[in-house]
Image (tube, rainbow, N blue to C red; front, side, top):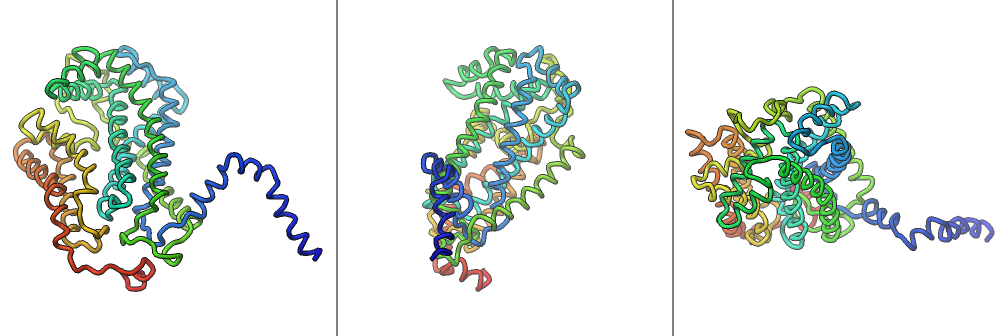
Length: 412
């Protein structure tokens, strides 16, 4: 009896200790343990599910380096370029932090596109995960706006003319176009007002993205993760605790991603830095080739492939807006493309068309690239508006595994 009583004593002390008192009033520790330690996750998640953790870490790195850069930045047309040069040459380790920030933008968008492709391929947009999909698309739009605003801030040649091209594109919108252009630029051409507004927009949206990430993660934990089979877990055999199984897997993914990140920062800086942007903005000299960063090139290719300026703008924006309709356009009860042969081919063609549109944007849709761009644009929208709704008719009679564990034994 004495031994049993002594064994019970530590539990009693723990229940009445400071930690228990605090957790009863602010249950942060117990909530963290419930959502990130004991949280049951499908046992068959592959490496594509690492990109959620990768995106979160890169976002935090971007915010930390962005705050440092903002402290040393001057948001005026006369001082912006000089302040960036001072960060690079005079501020201790400023060159490194700016390189990390610029590389982070490219790597973040690359990881985000892979994350989006994974959702499309494995049907992560289907019920009951519609809100998870929609919040992710809101994040995509916010990140793209944030990235473009940040691209303008160095106030080099490409930054200035990129803002000028964006203003002219917005001006093509009937009715509200001129007002939107004036709102962004504050004048007939980019200058002090537009630079100040882009700086504020960049900072506010960056922290707003962090807030929407919280909503996105909350939606994930309400419905649970999808998996490569697209089958809901049916019992304990189909799941494992998030820790240590997926914390270790995410850690390995982060290490590999960090190695690639470091290679770009230290050995391949020209991949993320535009040479023309090392020249101060000159409104009197237009660069020979004005083009956006690589992650905007597919949408730039759509913009240039459509003959009408407003039509091109509508198509490039519509390329993102159509994604919001995907949960209702896809009527198939099967989630994963593993069990959808026709859809799997369509997804492969979609990826090819997206990459092709990037090359079209890079070559300014001239000559044969114009024809290729128009074909790719037609297929892009046909994929979502025509092929996706029709794909359900080709998938009748497909028998899915009874559970994740059973599928693993069958080699699915």
